[in-house]
Image 1: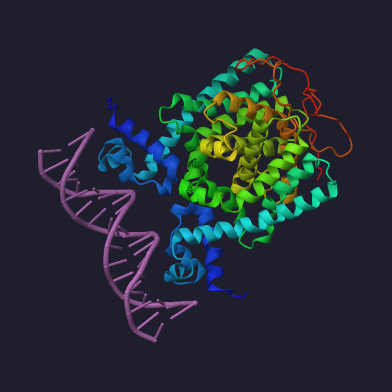
Image 2 (image 1 turned 60 degrees about the vertical axis):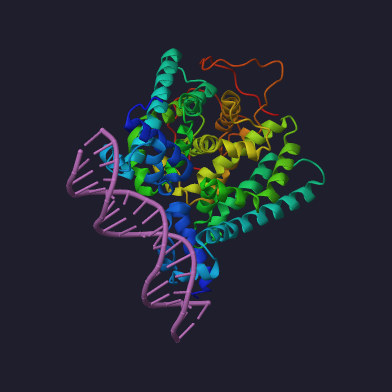
Length: 232
Length: 232
DNA sequence: GTCTATAAAGGGATAGAC
DNA sequence: GTCTATCCCTTTATAGAC
């Protein structure tokens, strides 16, 4: 076997256990046994269980957000100032999450990604201040440019809904298979991604609440909107 | 405020703690202290921590699914055989979840609803075989009737995405407020519900994959496309 | 860096008095 | 039904040998 580093084996095992049982439900004893390491190795390499968890999440999120940034930079450079097409933009946001599975031997990255926000508030805040806060404004700005008919709250709501749908896929592939009665193969990442992008793009493009002007669909007028629209 | 029954106070406190910390993260000592009850009361009334959890989830799910069934029966009777309007159908599925908050004094029902599927697989299976398995086929059949252009796998995928978005709202209202920078008020249930239904209805109505016409899409080419299609 | 051994705390469950 | 007291187990963390 290729033992890699003890530190890396600990991260691999911890990723699996945190994904399966959450932070509180995973025990360092099982993690270290799974990693073929000693219990004290966690303290030596990370200091505490919480620091190990943070390291696991950071390792999961880093390549996902790096890929998002890379694709976003490339797409915006290629667009030369024009708004991105909404399906392409959503694929940039969603694709790296779903494809992270293929690159991870343990295939638990997505579950960690989907679950870590449900951990205790202190943990979540600490993680939210980290790698999330660099990519989110970029995505938000790109969405606002591509969907000029929507107000900022509408953009915010829909981003939230979108990430929820993404996490529902990432959280548990077994649930998707069981829930669909075998109709959906969660192992088919590209199919799942195609369905997800199509669903999200349509939801994102849904017409916003219009008080009087009945636009059949969201106008693709790249007029820089600044008007505040207060409606219920 | 009547102290109700010890059993009910235990359920109330357990709902809060399970919602905040998950099954593994909640401790019976804190729950019983919060309920003003004795530690041994859990064993007496429920038998074990796991049975208490199951009772909490059942109490949360029962009124939600009962309301869904009631609304679905009424809508289908009123439709007299015609497919339901997709927005009305989605509101029937989603509304009882979001509105469950208003009826619960502790306002934790939604968080329990959103989190309980992330618990250990054994727990999840046990709960999935319960109240979920009566309402899901009804929703699925109604969706299939309202969206005849979609294949069964497409229906299944989109149901999964839909419930993910719903859970993202139910899971943590604080996240919605923080994530939106204060633009979204999670306490405004009706506004949130309206935005969510509009988003989901559009996603559900997205055109399905054409069998022969649509070839496999390349990864991400920001080729600007015309406005999207309207009806399925 | 890795190990053994143990500390210190907290967990769920339960027996038995009342 | 409710309580006290306790059992027994697991947990994280750490000290110190190697």
